[in-house]
Length: 301
Length: 297
Image (cartoon, rainbow over all chains, first blue to last red; front, side, top):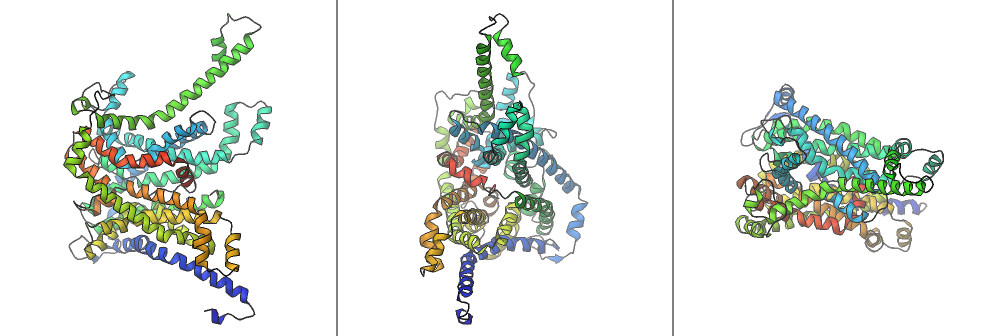
């Protein structure tokens, strides 16, 4: 390769050679990413146009898997459940996470330790957390109904009620992921300039006005990033729902992910499941593009 | 509002002249009280769930199902932990988890650290886009193809299959964090080394890599934690002997529906290592997570 470099341009050759060696650094990772990430994407796309149950022969059906999905009541309901769950699981952590970030942005004793405690839920194993919440939700012996009785409220059925199951699951999700929103917003607050506050204070602005008209607009890009990350994670929630309700009672908390799991690993309908993945992916991709767009605009990492 | 409350507290009976400093002091005290109250409100749910988990694991079954609930175990018992280890061969599953998460993290480091360096220096940002999209794809969608291939290769129910699958989690985290970290390092030192006749490899090995150690630490920890926490890969791919810890803990639930003590003990065994890591190296985790909102599948 270096033979083709003309002596007149040794520096260009030097750079080109270097670029090539940098590519060699990436090559092993490319192979692995191709095998475990890109290959599954393509395989899924391919299988989604086949009718295939594990153990029998596959045959080509075109777009039939998609057509049956889009008129399948259970799937449509799963989509609705997913959006309901996601909307709540984005908005609530965003509000609480911003409030928490405002608190942790101040200086106060034990701040480091308390912040450590606050982010513990985020790192905890979801299955372990889900088990503890399952016990807390128990209508007779659960601690949550005891807490309700302490403040004079009647007991609730929590995840055993078809109408309350999704809000109850959102509680777990809020507990689990509010810290991530807090960290992102806290990062935004740390980067704020001090001058606007000083001049606004001189003009007699209240704390609320400072927050509403200076802080909020300035951290807005971080809030958008947090919102998009939270949306993606909420759409993908699986462990807690699977462990706590398994999609029940009935199918009241069955999200797209739960439906996908059943199709793939309970019924072994690989074709249908692949079509579900593709539809799911299209939903998430719309948000993926939004995330990339937002990242381009903010460029903070 | 603050003002009204403060003046009410100061009272109409206070003398006219020195009222001001008193009122100010009360107002400040109230404000501080309000602040600490909000700290308590925002932090207590986090700690209370873990304390309740601990409480359940240290109580007898009788104490666990009485109403109203007992919070402080008296006396505390380790019988639940003993029972979990004796009846469910948790020791073996603990080992499986260490092998799977350790193996997947090691492979991710071996290929991901150089890749991060290459991406940062060659400007191959298309790969980070692939990684971002991978971050957005539900974990289950990787499972169907990989499950099918492993079945074809006869690898289902093996730890090898689990390690390979966990690369889906660990490789993107390490590549993404390392690419970001190498980009923050100054290039001058490397250029000097190259001009002195060093190869790109020696520059990487002896100049860039030592400087990137903090990034490697963050990447290793986050990759390990998110792999350790993963449930669904093991739930689908593992057999009886190759279960990872979260899968084994879930099985305690399905087989002993009402044995809360052992259940909580199992939950603590799986999540305690992660919580300890979180507290020990909180600062590094915070940095790693805020730069890019990385999270495992």
